[in-house]
Image 1 (tube, helix red, strand yellow):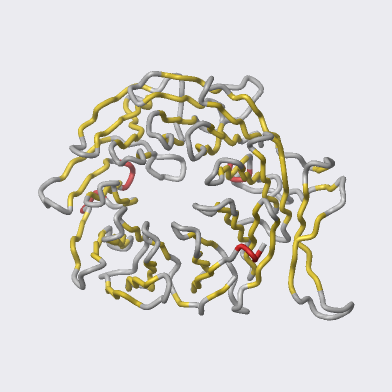
Image 2 (cartoon, rainbow, N blue to C red; image 1 turned 135 degrees about the vertical axis):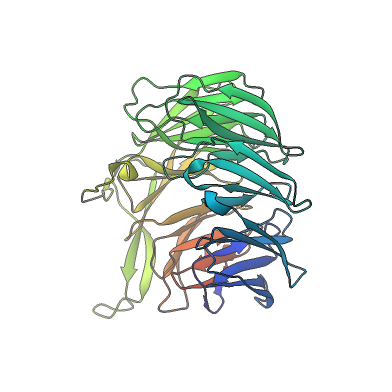
Length: 436
């Protein structure tokens, strides 16, 4: 794996959707670089510190959210001037995101008062949706179809949750229906084909509902043995499988044929199976008694006891259950992370519907992401190493910067590059298949 030099930034770096450019913030400055050469293409100065930035879907525009002033500034890649400026006014600004059209921006006001849709084509074309629903982290519950035709979001009226399906062409509400039997919807995800959606209830009731976009209820996933609710979910790339991670530490897999959970994958505390490989991160030295030279994965003998989380937390809900579930791009593998074993990443074979490998690290896992184009998994734990897994093996790679700790990372759209982030700097990395 090759690394570039480290660049200073203020904690935000985002690849463009076409994978050719990288935008990052440095205080009040927006820097746009070429991914291959890292040459600076554009440098813009905002009126206040940038708290969030995002690319439009066609990679032509970048929006910057200035949290100190509740203002959004939008810049074009091919212009040196500001394209638009949005001011939410007295309502405040909670979050902002591009709509799939690439010419409209969606903003959420403070206290979830309203959702506003702004147009770059006509400054007088402003639409609003009242009483949108947010999750417990105050994030708007919204999802989009991949064909960019529809948007689904949750609305809260009269202490009841409703799903709204909005036509993105004219922003008309084409469907609205009450969600059956839920008390506090926390997440909603449209399937990759855009024909179905799944929403899950809060942490105290395991209830996942699958709807067609016309509002027809296809299935209710409500296992009687589940004491706690669902926490996270993910669709496979073709929409044939749906994985739901629960606060009870189990991951349930739903098939599109019956829309029933046909597998319940439990996260073990110890491994004693010939079909599961345990890779453990170990330090090594060149000779006995010398300083540590680096780390590598070693295959462990079994039975093997997985390291458990120690200590108590005042926020119990944040330390329970499956916090991450994600399918690989080909749908053949799935990775999960469970709060009870924070140093571990579990990799499941979808063909066999069983655990295939467990990666055990020295530090708690901070981020796990699949390569968007290859069956390759990236992992970081907040240290100076980066980790890769594929069906052919796994490896630990030391960054070339001695004071650099990988706190977060993002894959490029084609999987040929990554941006690795520390707290105050970032660098690019270019993995090769011979790294594994």
